[in-house]
Amino acid sequence: MIHSTIGLFHTAMAFLAMATGATVIFMRKGTKRHKQWGYIYVTSMLLLNGSAFFIYNFGNRPSLFHLFALISLATLVAGIVPAITKKHKNWYPRHFYFMSWSVVGLYCAFWAETGTRLLNGQHFWWAVAIASTSTALVGKVFIDREAKKLFGKA
Image 1 (cartoon, rainbow, N blue to C red):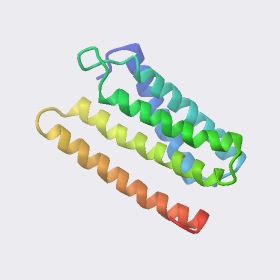
Image 2 (tube, rainbow, N blue to C red):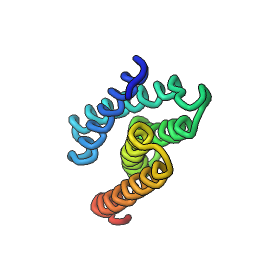
Image 3 (cartoon, one colour):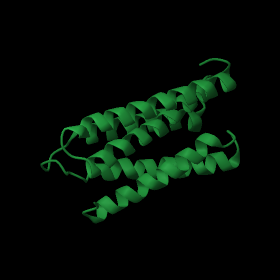
Image 4 (cartoon, rainbow, N blue to C red):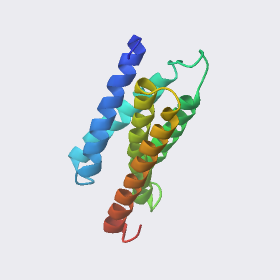
């Protein structure tokens, strides 16, 4: 399942990011603990996405997974920069939405990676598509519900 040291590192960072991302999502926002766990999440995601660019399992060339790693990095940066700089008066909703979608995207990527490792043949794409779409829909419901509580809108 894991064929290299970089693959092991990538997997470890993925599990750390999944654990810390879920923790941050469900804890009270704005606390010192939230920020500490958030920075662990951001660091693990940066290392996870960075390590993705050293993994080439599909013919030693970039794949769709590398494109998703770039999208993940963009979402992560779009979520953390407003929280660090606080330059815009609406920094908090931007931080909330982008970081929330970063975590949801991570869980969608988990299904894609799991499908790549465990499934093969004609059912691979269907299984990954259904699992990822379901995860994104559940994430959207959660994000909308939390946004309504935090900002009075979805």
